[in-house]
Structure formats: C-alpha cells, structure tokens
Image 1: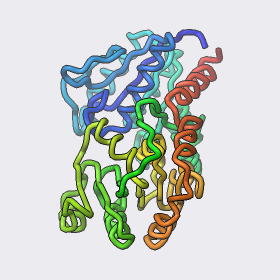
Image 2 (image 1 turned 180 degrees about the vertical axis):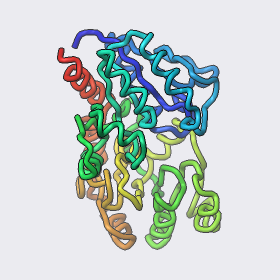
Image 3 (image 1 turned 45 degrees about the vertical axis):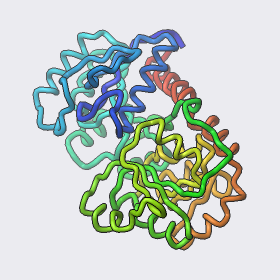
Image 4 (image 1 turned 90 degrees about the horizontal axis):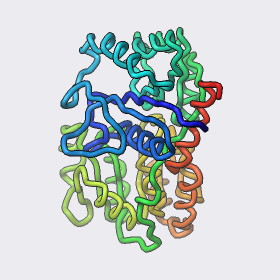
Length: 342
C-alpha cells in the first residue's frame, strides 16, 4: 500500500499511550507506532502523559484526561475544524461519542471509520452512526453478530493485536493460576477465587479494583498472600512475568465481552486459558487446544485437572498466527485501501 496520512482519534478520558490500565489506548498506540514504521504519516488526537516520548506526534486537546468528555459540548465544533485543517486522508476514530463530528467529515472527502472498542448503546451517537452509514469496524465476530442483530452494518472485523515478541514464552510453569483484568462482578473474579480454592490451587490476581464494595466483600477476606495473592495494577514487566509462569489464566467473564485482551496476552506467554463460554472466549480460546471453554465453576475445576494436555508452544503460535500486531496492521491497511479505493 502507498504511504497515506492517518489521524487516530483516541480517548481523552485516558492517556495515550496508557499509563496502567487502558485497552483502547494501547491499541491506538500500537497502530500509530507500527503504521509510522511502515512509512505512513500518522498523528494521534488524544492526551499525552507527561515525560513520555512517542514515535508519532500527539495533538493534545487537554493537558490531562477528561473523565466526562461528553459534557464538553464545544469539543464537537473544535474537533470538526481541527481535523479538517490537518489535511489527512484517513480519520480513524476509536470513540463512539464523537459520531457527530466524524460524520461531518464525510462531507470533506475524507475516509472515515470507527473501531468499536465497546458496545453501541441506544443514544444519539448510535442513531447518527446507523443513519449516516459510517464504516464500523468490529473487534470480533461476536461483536459483529450482536450489532448486526441491532440493525448496524459492520464494514469489517479486525482483531486486536499485540507485539508478541514482548511477551516471554515459558514451558516451565509455576504452582499457581492467575487472573488478569479489572476487579468487579462482571468479570467473575469471585468465581475464580472460589474455583481455585476448591481445586486446591493457588491464585494470583492482577488488575485495578473497579468496584471497591465487591472487592471488600468477596475478594479481600480470602487474600492471605499464600493461597490467594492480590498484586494490584502491575506494570508490564510484572504482568508478563507472572503470566508466563502461571499454570493457566482463569477467565470466568459474566457478560458477552467483545474482546478479552488478557486471554491473548496469556496465550502469548504459552499459558492456556480456562474461560466461560461467553463472548470472545469462544473465538480466542480453541477448546482442548489452547485451553478450555467451560460453562460453570465445576467445569473450571475439571479443566484444571486436564491442563497437562495443552502444549504451551501451540498457545504461542496461535497468537502469532491470529493476534499479532503485524496481522492487525495488515488488516487495517486493507480496510483503508477499500475506503480510499486504492
């Protein structure tokens, strides 16, 4: 593909690149970095953390994250004039609440697309996206099926990718299971805690506390530093070190999650995943090959007993084949080419 000019619109409610937890911002950072390496002219509209250098320019709207960006109505007109003045060919948005602004850009012969990192709710932005037919990119076939059932037309499916080489691979596993993600009821962390205890396995938890009352009631009482350890929101090095030596990632998600990046990160380290048969778990985990897709707590315990049949190298290679950053970049280049008709 020829060199093109691309503007990514990231969240302004978090830093890009993310400081700590931030899945969408991580994907924006990877796209911008690798697209620039391939010779494209790339810019990012977002909030840059102080003291962090990036391989691409970030155009700041604010000096620090804005927690309720929808309340800043002036952003819509500001963004329209700013984006139009940048003379870019592709505007790649990653936040749905900007639908009024990005829809306006279609009038100026710009290729516009929106990657849906979350569900589309029944609000103004959703109605605008449906009426104006802005190309929507789903991050999984699970998401595509759900949204098409609501009347939205999905342009393409593009899986998230990771820089696989940054994830240490290990065949040698420790004596513990691991959970990675935010701590709240929708992630089923209490089920992971209970199942691990029943299976006689140690469990290590990593991730931010999203619901303090839930944590205090159902998680904290069982933390003893031996059978159950909570490490908090860890840095990248700690995360991958713990993942690479875990027997398995336990992922008892309670809702139709569109893409569970934690599962891909674990598999990249050669660590199998035991997850509930909801949402993207059924797409990411190959049952009996890279882990186990289960339906309840009892089946988690049974799956732990069968972990010996999973080959860590198969887990790693599956990520290389399906969820690498390189694959993600190639997929978006094909999408841009279709939109630009080049």
